[in-house]
Picture 1 (cartoon, rainbow, N blue to C red):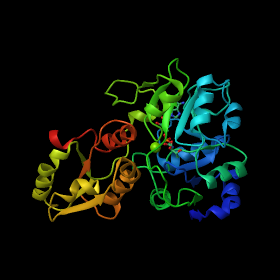
Picture 2: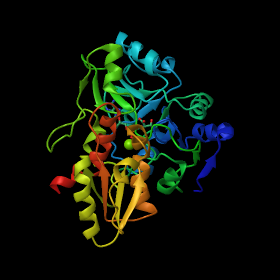
Picture 3: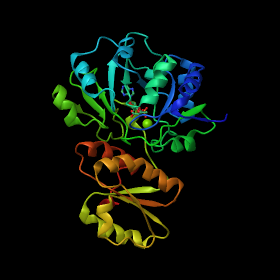
Length: 339
Ligand code: TXA
Ligand code: MG
């Protein structure tokens, strides 16, 4: 199958493919998603196949607004209405109890709940509206690989396996949405993301966090959290503190072959990179670092293959929680200081 590239002025063609039960990747403000008609069981099953995704890992249902959620979910808690007013459209996914049988088992992974999200990207909102149905949308990468922040990343992973890609250029946030479980007494963050814990608490008061590393034998609430994720081919080492960089760069200089270095421009400016280091800048701050993280990991897979990558760590605060969650997974929790 030839994978077509649709431009934002070709929504009709992309929607026709969705209505025919085919898969079309779509842009969001976070990462690209792999779209299919959420009400078409056969289409949803193909999403798992194309990604190589385990079938017990449920999908996010992408909607144009809360009215579409009400068709499938139980009446929403008052706190959810507040969050929707404050953050939709935007990088916040909310989990609700479903009306019995409202969505197929392949969407929910057999749970009684489902995750809903109203993405902040106009071509994609047009695509959902034009398709007339909500779209499932896991990140449009091969399972286990870094999430795609460019249409080119999707093409690399899924060319020949999906009907099309709606190309709207680079995504804005770069890490996936915050997943918040609203089906528990105290709302619980299952995955940190583009909306921070602090932002949520300002609107609804205390939320709980259960996104910390899940050990062997523990059962995570978000099934997706148990899989190794975001892994490039190289081993990633997290450099946690500014003062670790001289030792880290000295170590890099002793390695055979090229070593990748991902850090803020200002972090590296005063240190001399060894001749065998390949620098990928994470820009100026936490915002640009989150935006560039997956692109950097893919850069060292595709354009500039290396065996090791040194990547800058940040405080686990605000957007840093989302960044560190993804970086820790890509590194398999390996830090430079204890490697
Ligand atoms: O930003 C995003 O959220 C992107 C864009 C494309 O919207 N999508 C995305 O989807 O990251 P995915 O499938 O890669 O991640 C969804 C996460 C998984 O960890 C999954 O296990 C969890 O949400 N999830 C989905 N439904 C759930 C449910 N009913 N209960 C608990 N966790 C759920
Ligand atoms: Mg994903």
